[in-house]
Image 1: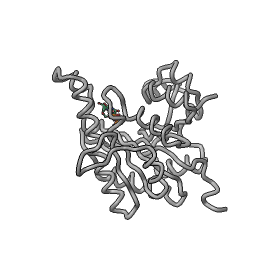
Image 2: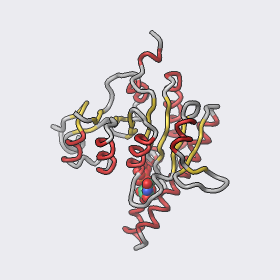
Image 3: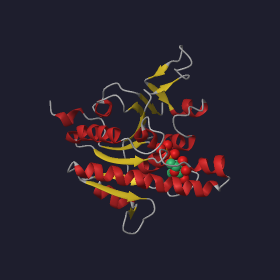
Image 4: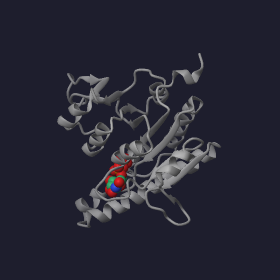
Length: 242
Ligand code: UDP
């Protein structure tokens, strides 16, 4: 069977958190994890799926640190957080480029000489021949890169959002503390919103629900998990409308 006949999506947004890149370090980027990530991404290229990556920045800075630690303005912290996503994006960009893969980086706000500003129509053209890295969040304080992933997914007419995490998917309760926690293969948006499931923020869920775009929550630390989702295998949790 042709490998491409197995794929379930033509265009996806992959959300990678800063926390994943950090690994066991207290902050920053673990090079081993970065290389592992590139290997997982490379493995899906033969499928020919159009891919945009939204990268977080929590390994370097989060807006809430300002408020919690230094009594600095939250907006300032968020601006630093957004800049952090660009730092991660630049690292990811160079690492992907080093493997001779076509890649393009955009930021919600341009930085002259470093990165171009995001433009949805340009991104839709470029995604046909390049992996697109989307940095800078949505460019506004008080949001997250999870919301960015959903928003860009809608704008770029992606078929799904894939949120790479360190957990296997969505459970009814915290599986570390409750042995009777139930794992969901499939779940609907109204449930995760009503139960305040914290795996993504509600703004992200509401956007995805209203624009009817599914979200896969999966454990990127399991080798091959990304490939398995894209070829229709059971992996992680899919959140969608009923
Ligand atoms: N951020 C923001 N607006 C956005 C996206 C991100 O202000 O649209 C800031 C916010 O402070 C956030 C930080 O950037 O804490 C890093 O993003 P996020 O927490 O989503 O990163 P992740 O948890 O995925 O590493």
